[in-house]
Amino acid sequence: MFRSGGPTLRELTAEALSSTERGYDLLAPKFDVTPFRTPDAVLDAVSTHLAPAAPYASGLDICCGTGAGMRMLHGVCRERVVGVDFSRGMLDVGRRNLGHLCGGPSLEWVRGDALTLPLARSFDIAVCFGALGHIPRADEDRFLGQVAGVLRPGGRFVIVTSTMPAPWSPRRWIARGFNGAMHLRNALVSPPFVMYYLTFLLPGITGRLERLGFRVDARRLADSGPPSRLWVVNAVLGQKY
Image 1: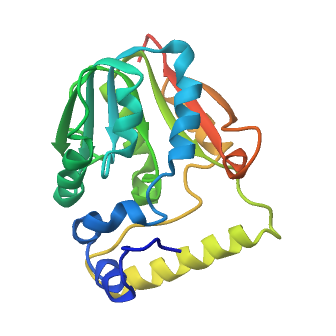
Image 2 (image 1 turned 180 degrees about the vertical axis):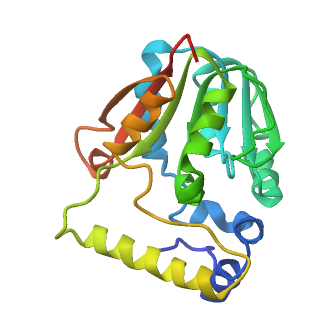
């Protein structure tokens, strides 16, 4: 499951028994060698989907972690790329990871909560990769409203998601089992660690974005291989928001 140099079982246990923020502070130095980091193949496929409308003036990576999504945005934006995350540890690793990038858009790192984004309406594109399961279900619409609030009219919000796995799919029951374990953990241990699977799925996410004034296009991320199970949702904010 983890490559060489990844967290030990003891470290993962300590992280899971911490708050979400503290857990990611602890995980940050080894995050990039865990399966939780969005694979480059997924980010490369998203970049291909974004290329026809590129370059974008300014880009935002929400819950940017160690900067993988920011690296992708750096290739499709021309002026400014901002990453926001509530984990100081993840931001520190991200700065080191992308410190070698020269030229192109400026890189900015902001410590903040995705539910109260400390940013103005100034972005042409916002992305969120691998972090949607950290949004509490009760706050999902609030999160989407925050995203809409930082985009210029005509700006786009891009995520990677999937449809609900079939009832007989092992992936569905493994995810439901994990979610059940997290609900139990959070009922017994405080502060909570928010991390759930099967969130922001198609087709439901389409209607929720449309109600906020987005025009939504969803298509397969790739034609073959593991990424073909995924969908890229490209939602463009209407002029009247």
